[in-house]
Amino acid sequence: MEIVILVGFFALLIGIIVFAVRFVKKQNNKKIELFQQWALRLNLQHEHKKQLLAKLNMLSGELDGVPVVIYEHIVGSGKNQVLYTTVTFAPNPFDFDFKIGKEGFFSKVGKSFGSKDIEFGDEEFDKKFLLKCKDEEGRFRNLMDFRMQQELRNIEKQLKGAIQSSNAGFTYSLAGGFNKQAKLEEFERVIGFMRALIKNLR
Image (tube, rainbow, N blue to C red; front, top):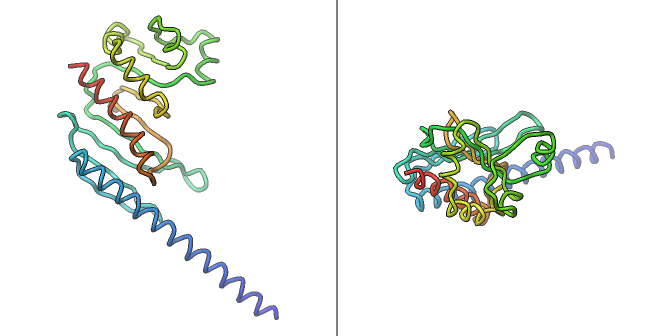
């Protein structure tokens, strides 16, 4: 009787493992298809690499004449692993550092302790967004003109992280991958804002 129970337990365990592997494989293939379609739409090159059970996608090429890479990468190890999707325009078309994000709890606490961000005199806009630029505030204000402020308002719901200009490039990262077209399109809208900023620089 004990042997029957033990065999049944291992059979169930193997079944769960097989199901999990097939599920992950199906999700990976679905994601690869999304990235392939995305590459065609943006006229970029697509490739993917395998990391354990995950398949990490990458798009590369140029957008508006600026080299760009959109890629998935895993940060952390073991149970603390997190998948990120990042877009990087490099070399950075901007020669000064800045950061654009949404106001959150910690940024509001920081303000109460004297940390300042750049404000534009629009109370509603200034409450929603966190904009920082240490050394080139005048140039950043010119970059973030009225039209670009409206463009930023348009992606308020889609902006889930910070857009940053630094020595590493002009980047934006989002925790998580894309298994649905809608999530990919949200990410692409943020990229659209970044492309508009680059064009506004010119």
